[in-house]
Amino acid sequence: RIHQMDFFDLPLPNSKQSLEIDTFSTSTTKSSLLSKSKPPYDCIVNSMVINCVTTPSKRGRMLSMCYHQLRPGGVLFLILPKLCLTQSKHMSRKYLEEILREGIGFEILNDGKRESPKLAFFVLRRPLDGGDDSCDV
Image (cartoon, rainbow, N blue to C red; front, side, top):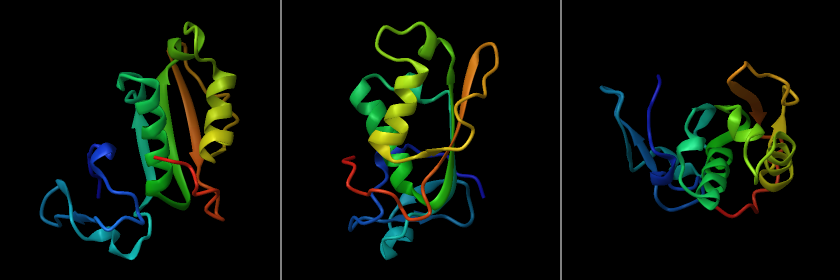
């Protein structure tokens, strides 16, 4: 089942709020799936989204939320315009990889080498041991 949602509306897996999935539609609303404090997703696709988030702090929060919504061993497919890494004064591929590894805790599975003429692709995994959950969201 595929769901479309705004991660900023999701509670963290260990919060008292939870998520309920309507089994008769593709809509997702808050209420009961997360009650066991277990991250609910094996895979998240974030394609051409992060570049539309307005501030660096919100982009960091979005990546952190993706990390916390993945089960240990879960995978995030991150796709963004290559120009965001090559034409920015404040961001580069190397710096983004450092943020993803050191700041958030992801493992980069494809070593950041996948790209097309216009897109950069990252395959990121939450470590099986869960990594460091101390990252603020």
